[in-house]
Length: 317
Image 1 (cartoon, rainbow, N blue to C red):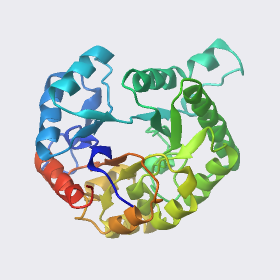
Image 2: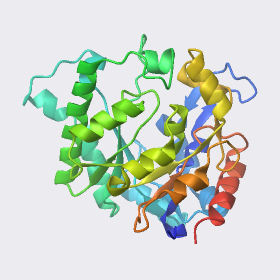
Image 3: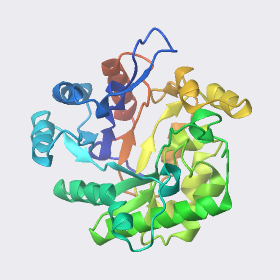
C-alpha cells in the first residue's frame, strides 16, 4: 500500500513527558500538558514539530485553552491536526458508584463529550479511545507490574467494556468514530483483554486504533493483531521500543514508570520493533492516520522529532 505523508503526525509528547532532573532517573516525573505554564511554551513546541518536517500534529487542546486559541496557535505553526485521544475512567476505581440513568452517571462522560466537541470543531471524525491510566495507591498495573495483565478480573473487565461502549456511543452520536486504543497500564492491556473488548462492542461503534509499541510491550505480535483486525482499523500509533527492557519488565515485576526510566521508549528505527513489517500489514485500501509517538525521548526533544521525521520521510510519500 502507499502511505501518504499528509496522514502522518507527531504527538509532541517528547516535550511534555520529562524528568524533573534529566540526569537523575529517580527524580520526579513531569507531565507538562497539565502544567498551566506550558501554555507559553506550546507555540514554540509546535514550531519545532513543523521545523522537524511534520505537516500535522496530534490534537491536544490544553485545559487552559479555548478551542479558538488552540486553532490560532496550530495555524501559526503551519500544521494540520490529526485525531486526538480520549480516555474514560472506571468509576469504581475512584470510589464512585453510579446509579444507571442518574445525573451523576451522565456527567461521568463529560470529558468524552468535550473530546467529541473538539474533534468536530477541527473537522476530525475519528478518535483514539482508551481506559484511564490509574495511578492510585495499590493499582498493580501502573505501580507494581506493567504489561502482564496484573490483577485481571472478569467482572471488572465487563464493567470496563460497559464504560467504553457508552463512551463509543456518545462519540458516535456526535459523528466521531472511536477506535480502541490498547495501552499498557490500563485495564485493556493484554491480547485477551483487547479481544474481549472488540468482541463485545460492535465494530460499528468501536473500531481499532492500536498502539504498535504498547502491543509489543505486552508481548503481543503487532503484525498478527493488525492482520486479524484489518477490516476494523481506524488509526494507528507508531512507537519503537527497547524490547529487552520490555521483556525484562514482564519477567520481573516492574512498575510502568520504572520501565520508562530504564530507556524503554526509542525513536522509530532506533528500537527493536519491526515497524516496517507492521506498516506492511496494513490493508491496501487503508487511509487512516499514523501518529508517531516517543513517550520519553532518548535525546533532546527537538532532535527526537527530527529523527522521527527522518524515519517517516523514507516511508511515506
